[in-house]
Length: 421
Image 1 (tube, rainbow, N blue to C red):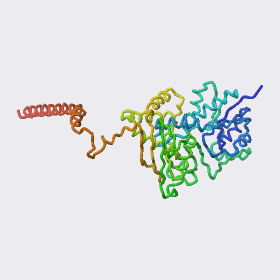
Image 2: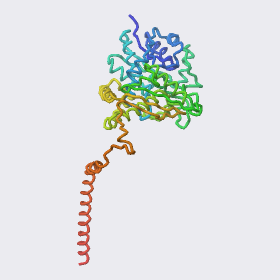
Image 3: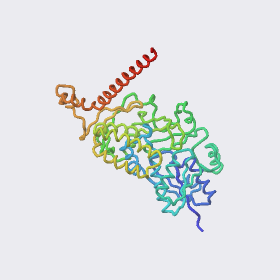
Image 4: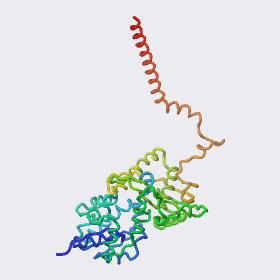
């Protein structure tokens, strides 16, 4: 009888390396590791050797960068999805794609179980399990970190050392890092105290504002239907474009986020992120929308953006509501095409210029010079009609108050007269 097979979401980090060895021993199973390349640079060296050393019988390392950006990150950009108005959700957006990839491998290998390395109080456990359940309800999901004997990362480090499992985490530098092209999340260690400024060694790519160049840099981003397609007039495919913006942004200290956020599981968490390209692109995209979107669409889209971000953060990418909102977003982006020039300087992104063939900005209507074509006389009638409901409401209210006051005085006078008698 052949052994059962478990597909493991493998990052090469401490948790998943220990998990491969632990699962192999506890389930007497063949372990198949799955690593999706979303643009991470940490833990990728000797990934195959590390997986085999931990006990894997087969490994998959799949380049998902293009699919990740074009089918997940860019649609979220079009939606303007920022969780709690700050976080571009690099980790969150990657999880549904990784879940889909693991399901595909499980089908190919005949595996009946998928294991992830998420903790019992994190958001990623929900994202993985809900996504896998939506795509493959027949597959069992294992979450060793919720059940195994280790109570701390220090204990995991000791287990790894005792069993010859190569890991890069140390007790001295115990950060938990998740990285992809859209951004990096950094947790644990000193970061768990919201009163402690992130240590310099916590940041993985960005310069501090103090060490950033003293001269600002400008970059012009071209968009087609809300999708970034060029830098400074040169067309770029998605990976190259994001890598370029990550580099120039990191150099200028762009994209550092220190956030107390509300986790899905009901606790507040201190999260530190680096997202240079995502920060620049969200800023530029929003400025282009200000130029091209009708007021009604723009205001309603802010509501959609909030809900879209919540769906991604809460693990509901593969949901009917997210797909329905995506249809609205796609329609809203039909004319969000043009260029946006921004200036990067010591952690700040500022607008310099913007232009679009679909611009709704009319200089002859906006100007205060002699070329003004706005019909000022029309404003009087507009204001009368626009303010009519409020004027009517308060007229009735004044009349009611006046009558009530008059009746109250008469009743008081009658009572006074009765006392006199």
